[in-house]
Image 1 (spheres, rainbow, N blue to C red):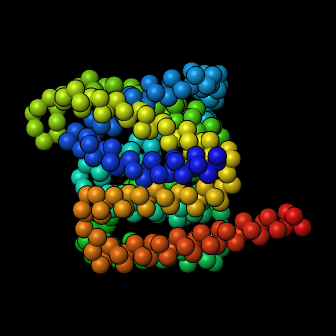
Image 2: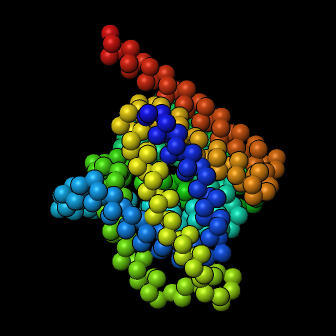
Image 3: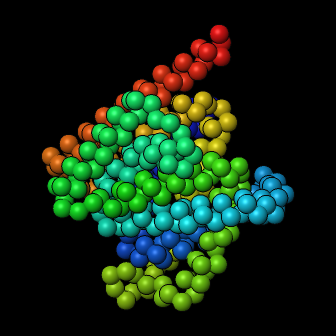
Length: 293
């Protein structure tokens, strides 16, 4: 069951651009505000059904944890905003690139923030990733800032949540609590209109925006169920399902151009991921052998 939950979570995350394409005519900030509000309501229902209110209250009483979750909230909002912007402006390939880069960014952040030491092949993987970004930058004449924003915001989010010591459901719910006042304020002062015209949002638009809470929470619950049942290394390999799905959608469903420069840049990123994954697998296998010995 653990593998089924994990695959379901990552496949849904990989297909999530299809949902945001349906509301691409709504401004990204308005979509982000609705996502916060409806995620809060949906997560509140789940917290109530699972009896987690005491955990939420205990978390809110821990000053250090709230401070860390405030930081993760900023990173999460940046990640959600950048992703929504990428989909609404037809740059799903860049969002895919960003999520392919997340494991490598996480390694770099671990070195910089936690003092972790890099193994030789990890260094090689990071250098290949840097080369890939350099190729894409040279071809476009500018940095792939959406991909970098997604990679660093999600990598930073993972780092903060790692040291915050709070469960996924409770942590995300507290983060939506912190974001809720800003989201409600934005909705109160911003006309609910379509981005490219003065037309007000239709009922169908509101129905789609309401689904943002479900789209956000359901894969998170599946991921949590998988994390309890699977090895961390297995989850690490499964995470590549998400950007692969996004890349396939971008090319075959949305017709985004994938030229030679993209191919070379992505090839270098994929090489970096292969090197990183093989090195991680060897390290885990060696640790298991040492433990059995």
